[in-house]
Length: 115
Ligand SMILES: CC(C)(COP(=O)(O)OP(=O)(O)OC[C@H]1O[C@@H](n2cnc3c(N)ncnc32)[C@H](O)[C@@H]1OP(=O)(O)O)[C@@H](O)C(=O)NCCC(=O)NCCS
Image 1 (tube, protein in one colour):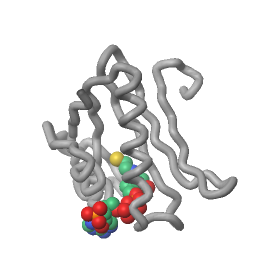
Image 2 (spheres, protein in one colour; image 1 turned 180 degrees about the horizontal axis):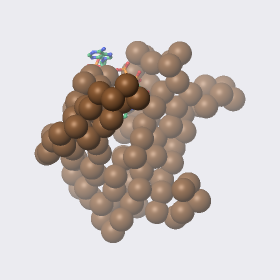
Image 3 (tube, helix red, strand yellow; image 1 turned 180 degrees about the vertical axis):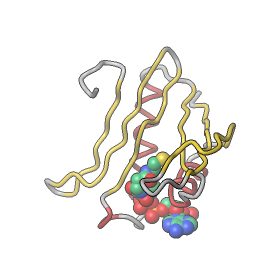
Image 4 (cartoon, protein in one colour; image 1 turned 120 degrees about the horizontal axis):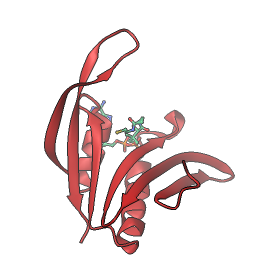
């Protein structure tokens, strides 16, 4: 997936160790943030914010004007990260995620304009 030219990936490094990444798929002037994660041992230090803002800046530099993402409704750290980075909820998908135990969780669709 990462070898395709429509993907943009940034990794966050601590020394020689990769401790986070963000990856998006671009199409015309839109992109979808497919995933962002910080190594569990490095969470809670605000590291994801700089990673996300750097990633968004590079997407804007590639001509992306609007970015979308999906987030599980109860994922408070991720929702807080996105809200503080300027994303707004524009949709809700009922029972979008299915847990291993069978529980079904809702997804929020979020959007931010980069221009
Ligand atoms: C989402 C993720 C990338 C955030 O990374 P992080 O650098 O550790 O983020 P922080 O710990 O700085 O938390 C981000 C915000 O959520 C808040 N937060 C953290 N845990 C929280 C909780 N349990 N409830 C409510 N808010 C919480 C923080 O206070 C912070 O808000 P602030 O900037 O207003 O202080 C990280 O939690 C992660 O990798 N999660 C697993 C992968 C994932 O869920 N990715 C998103 C998929 S859509």
